Image (cartoon, rainbow, N blue to C red; front, side, top):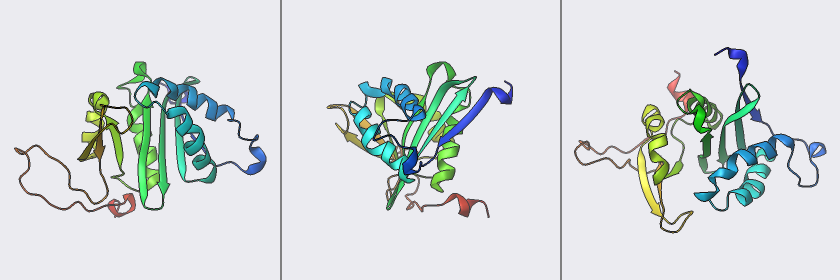
Length: 189
């Protein structure tokens, strides 16, 4: 693939003069259209996006990363960096672009912005096979499960919960060692 065919864009905070009385800007609306197919697993996603993500992007506490190929949106990630919480909130890759490096680009961009190589995140248990390889690559540790967090009866698997020790199968658990939070800046020295 020619590098000119691929672009990563970050939606940056806007000044008040650029905003239209609560309406979504074109980039924000395109991102929402891309996210809406997730609504089955996350029923309140549109309200969350409009009331949490967009205000956070506009004030700098959230980052929205869009990956485009030949002008089409093929991947999107959202992270938040608020006092006491660094979290990757959402990552979505168009199915036809799965396995083509879009996911790692999103994760790398969000991890760099968060300045944390072990941020908190959750994933629906049914979607875990789509993410397991990338979670293994980054060394993310499963730390919790919660039933009914977003959809009654569904299980949400948590990774890198602050202060938690990763849950490992007993056969692999040789020694329990408390997890130490590292920042990307610490790992480059």
